[in-house]
Image 1 (cartoon, one colour):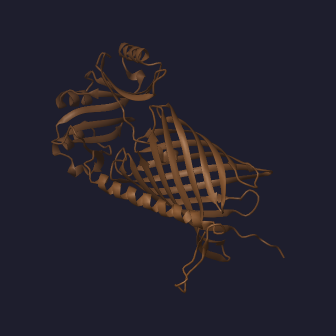
Image 2: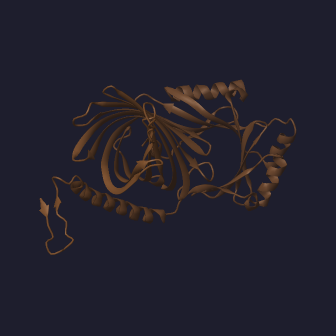
Image 3: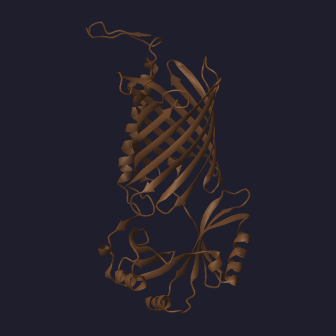
Length: 212
Length: 215
């Protein structure tokens, strides 16, 4: 008899609260609070378990320096509170955006190192392409709804293991003004497909961006 | 710490040491409180007057503007945009023709303000190009021209005559330039040069925040 592993899935809720503040002409700080709630987990075509519980809390702080009109370098730290443990992550990122007629493209290159108690150091290389698209006219104006699309590739190295995760993040946003944006979308992630059956994760995402 | 509610038959005993969610529940309450506060602030802000631009149907554009665009260009798909500004509202017709992007701006009453067409440096007269480049080299350590528009502010009659014949019509030049000077923050400017390439004015371009693309 041949056993075939079934692809697993998780469904959860991921609210994000992001606050940005300029601290000088060239420097800004960005803080994000992102708890995760897991709702359902199971295997496609198999059993599933419905159990709503708080999974973890991420608090990320990134200091950014403007290095060109549309480009910034960032250095950050993330604290992850999960199961009475705290994981620490160092973040380095380079990002830039390019405006086009009716939309912008944002490129983000990120490297991070995660230190979790009783686990090997995890190093990840990430690239994310995202776009905010105006639904009416050349620019997204105050009180307009917009579309945001994101696609991220994450390669991770931990001990002897290597994995690739792909994320697709479509969202609908409401541009209240330049300092306040609200987004609702899906954060879909697939990983483990290189060495075994893929794991699929779907996060219902509600994000709020505030600039002070 | 133990919390026990003995009078309640459904009481549950929480232990902050063994229950990983205990501390985080308090954090979550704080998080929800902050979110509520922010959404309230947002509602108040959303009441403020705003400036914006949005698509309108051709039929909503002033008749004189429609007539001018029809005389200027036939057969193109026209996008009509209404702009609401503190300085006054305007209506813009945008379209592509002969491989070029045109933008014709009118007042809200349909009076022609200007016709703009995107061009490249190579389409400029040599002496004008040299003068503009010299000005930019002197102003910045580094610069990159992102967009050039030839801007025609002549009368409707002159512009239509130029469009339908080989008349020469000298435009102004509007440039969007990305620039950097050592020790200063890199900035984007919109420049205006006259028909001979002499500097007229420049204004800093304020870009929308792109934090949603970085985080």
